[in-house]
Image 1 (cartoon, rainbow, N blue to C red):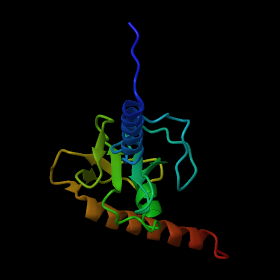
Image 2 (image 1 turned 180 degrees about the vertical axis):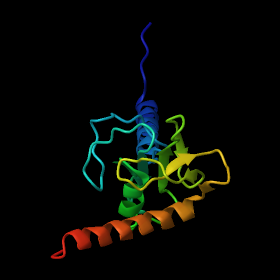
Image 3 (image 1 turned 45 degrees about the horizontal axis):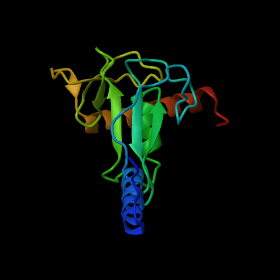
Length: 163
């Protein structure tokens, strides 16, 4: 069976393929990805991301660019790093954290946080979806991260006065 296509049919086929390719290429990916534990580096502190219960991922980019995924060994690193990005308030920005009980990825802004956990960078916040009297919301966790950072910087200056 010999199938021949005329010039107009070829134009439609090529145009359709181009449309398909361009529409796929321009869409941002969403959600967290599987981490290559001990192989990826924290964007802020440059330590290996190895803790399956306290790490974070941020997906985002400036308005005119495709989103990119960034990895962090602790929610504190993610929050402090993201705060320095011009695109931090972009609606496409996503923050994902591990549930400290299951290791599952959950939306950081919907999560609740328990204090007093032993975390890689000592910010002490464990994310969960379970609410109890000891949990705080995302906004309060961000405030807590800045308080811990301030305390750490004060301690460092006390230990090293020349800083």
